[in-house]
Image (tube, rainbow, N blue to C red):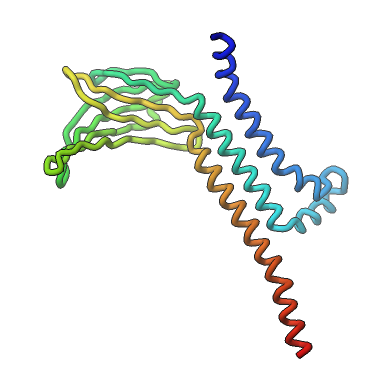
Length: 219
């Protein structure tokens, strides 16, 4: 049990180490190409200007993979709780204080909504006000859940409102560190792939255009 617990705790650290290796290793071919610290700085700059777009695309794509790996490693540190709280009550999740400020009804065009107002604070400073809710559609006889999310580059905070019983509301509260890095890394990988493809099209197209021009001149 202790060994397995230690192994599980070590997984995020291994993931972050792998992410750092991917990001730093992505730049190794460029450093080697420009012979950084082995040539005068001016000569390295000249070589850097000549690095093809496809090479930069590979660097960016590998760096994006590192960002995604870091995001997935951060998710291993995610925390969540399901709590039943009264209005005015505060619970701690993931280093944040979550306070249920109140519950209210909010009629819509074809539904009735029940909303919770939740203040998320850290060290006494308000980070976000989240308003998760439930929507009831009388004609369709269905109920949907409206999740409230606040995100930045560091983490996702989100809350879900469940059922209410005897003046208490059931809340699902989540803190997902580095979750946005997963999608950011995917976008960076796509950018790197696009740069590589664009450069290859230019390089393939150039000989074809030169060949066509030569044939036209000989004719």
